Amino acid sequence: MSGCFRLREDGVDLFVRLTPKSSKDAVEGVEHTADGRCHFAARVRAVPEKGDANAALEKLFADELGIPRKSIKVVAGGTSRLKTVRITGNASELARLMAEFARR
Image (tube, rainbow, N blue to C red):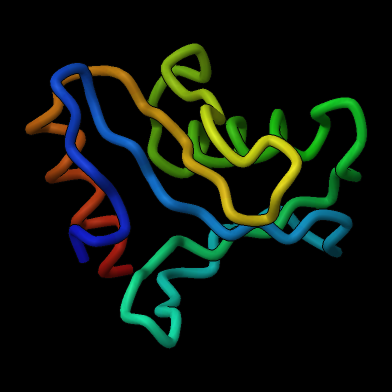
């Protein structure tokens, strides 16, 4: 599952496929692409306008992982469905948390 995130010196980067304008806010697990890459699949009710869906995604991961919202930021794919979400903090602890989260 470590292919769904990348360790950094100051935390982790998550790879996420976001579906906006959904009926619910949820992380639906891990998906794999045909070329073997993986990402977390997430849905948010927010619309993809003025960064609303990205902000909802950041809040969703903060709530799901029990970490402060200020530690999470969409750093790539701002207008795309495929995004990179950076979580700053203790890298080894976050990697453990992400591995557990991916197995849910």
